[in-house]
Image 1 (tube, rainbow over the protein chains, first blue to last red):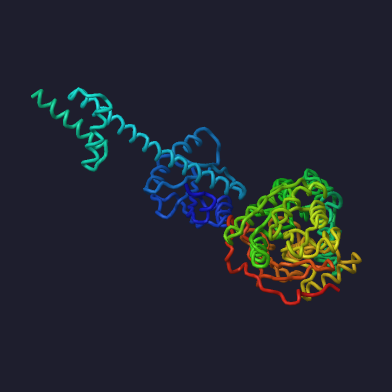
Image 2 (tube, each protein chain N blue to C red):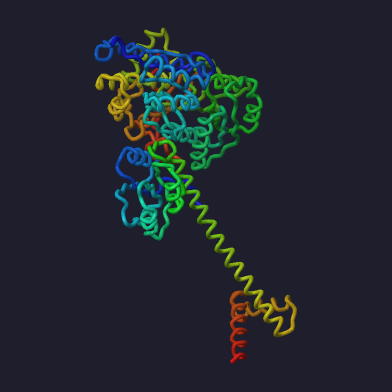
Length: 199
Length: 386
């Protein structure tokens, strides 16, 4: 995993906020921190490619519009919501758009760096967990397939579980493919054969 | 109105009193000079000075007192970061202007603070380069136990790694540490024989550490202690013999040979009798008061917004050379010199950077080969002290 502190100055940040004192403070601090940055207002329809991180003023904005802006780009940006009120309805919006960190108005210089790092780190972790979860799911699927195939072989040939597995593995080696592929073929063949029987 | 009141918040007693007294003197000298010329807009500046006695908590309390009871809107003060962090919320809440004439570890910005000392990119990198080229790249870190030493060492370790160096040890001590407390680490240093000891021990502990190193047979001429804070005032307390050969990097040394520095030292001697305690912190306090007075001349009122407006981008022909407040971050463009203590206890300048370096308080990893950090060799070591 890349180090958010080390990569800080490679970040492209976008500030979506009316041009007021809070926006000025924020832009100046992002400049001090040393990131590339741009400012946009009002909320644009789509998010340009180059931005890794978005500071987003959520005051008086519908969650729907915000989400459609954030999802307009395939590259999911890190989101730092800027809020004026800490009401449950505002906080709901933060959850809905999937913000990774929050700044409150009026924005002060202190705290911007920490929230950027926390947001980057949190998002990276989320991505890592998602990736790992996907891998684990696939693995579980594969194990299930091989199991099913083993039982088919055991039933048809009257062999032990161990022998059934060895058979699948040997086939995979001669055909230069994975045990999952072989298992899938066995399952497919079985279903075709049994369907024929019905006909 | 009879006078412009400004607050001075430097410890005259306690562990950091040597350096803070020198900063206080620098500020007082500048105030004298301004008042001798008729003050600001014909009105003299009147300093109100409190002594926080090197107790962290008192800095915040006294800053509050200055602002609330004495109706002061501008304060100069603080040495250690921990004391600055006490003052910071007070000046922000009351919207006062605070001048901090001390080097520190960076990663801070407050619209209410003007930072007059060096941040790591301005002095750590030139120092690391010089040490590795001159002595070798096996370092030993010794520091006081607070944020500045830890952050300095992080930067130093990073620059060292880029230069292929290694850190043989890293130890932190209480601010109140005495000579005897250092014996164990000095044994370890003698045993591991590093090329350089990088010390971020500050205040009284610094004096104790240099003395202990000397007593144990350590010699600055073979393995120097390098520091960003050890200064003229502390050499005085450590003694010439125990200080000889050690290295400091700072934006200012007494030995700088320039008309501005000569007249600064002359005025200092006339006011305080001698210049032995003139340090880079003293020079920074002196320059900041002058920068403030020039801004006040323009605004005509002590008001944080308008003073800041004038101060950002302002420059001053300081004893170290021309300095300028960076409008991007309220820090100051400073020079960087590297000096070695000679047998007579005087700093002799060995190298300096070509021009004032832009402050970059949010630089996480300074790079060793940045051209702006290259130093020039100084022949003859600048001026011998009169």
